[in-house]
Figure (cartoon, rainbow, N blue to C red):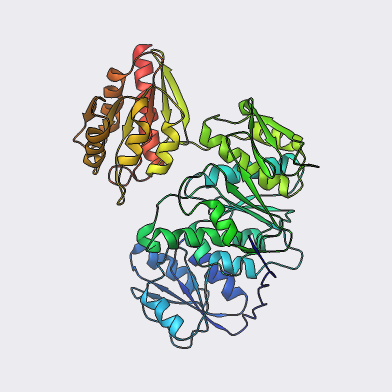
Length: 483
């Protein structure tokens, strides 16, 4: 793990500066308003010009902000700084022109970081392919249990600009950061940070797995106390590799979390107890009990890993062991994240509609056995051979839905030919009800019917929440029919 001086971000005087904001939407509109309020001359550019964009433009123009709709590629004359929505891809012509002109490009996270006051709350930051939101919510719950003023912010809940500029005072912030946000946040320096896991995702945006991992790894740059990594990760580069490559403050430590017995400078699990061998006196000989596995809801393996990562960041901030336990007990996971819906005829029905990629689905499938698996949707370029190979022995059957279900069916035929498969060739609103009914026919008492689609939802549903709601409604219909 490298070490060196933290690069402090220079104060930036926005008064009279010509700032171009790239993109309307959830981050662009507030960024434009904040910059305008700081005295900048703001121009917003946006690719689209639909009804929503026109309404947002009218709102901004009423404040005196210039908006150019339908042209997100041209660099406005006189631009001195670009602040971009995180989702805008780095290869946009606008950014190429900005780089040629020697301009800085910030995301909304970078803007928030630059606008922090001298006594601003430190950031405990979390990224990873899966589990970010749950881990950040667990972390906030633990920090609150310790009596600290905090909030879950960033790619979740409260926006970072609101957290930094609002009237509420915080002691510490639990910050979720996506790879997109990290790409555009060059001067971010967290108190401590965690990369939960790495699996191929958003490669169309980043261009390669190496570039994706490098952007995730930015979260470790300049960490002061702890770089938290996943000991059990087998992907390359691993989260530990990213820690080794990071340039951090002198004295910052690498702290691992594992579902196994922890070594020194690690958190792990011993006989159903979450234990800390990182933030204790004489960590080579001593361990501190933090909580029981039963305190984590749900106690699925990947969620235990989330809890350990949250505990590690909280302990890095000095939170006592009792607050870890109390915070985990108080935490309730969001809907559609490995949520138990009901038991019908001795079969458990579990909604993990949030498992929108293969890595998340694999973690979900690892939590149960035997499983009737409901899967499918938009594959986003994913392949399913590894997922099916890893999970085949757990499967009682599979029910496939959605536009790219053939990719999963073919992987099952190659690697799990013994598993019965129902292929539902329909995308209407009743398709999920039919899937649940087919799954019921395949399931035996003691089985779990698991919605873990491994795909995005937009071929059939507005979002993964609507997909999960449709599953839960269909399950409740089963139960009421029995009643």
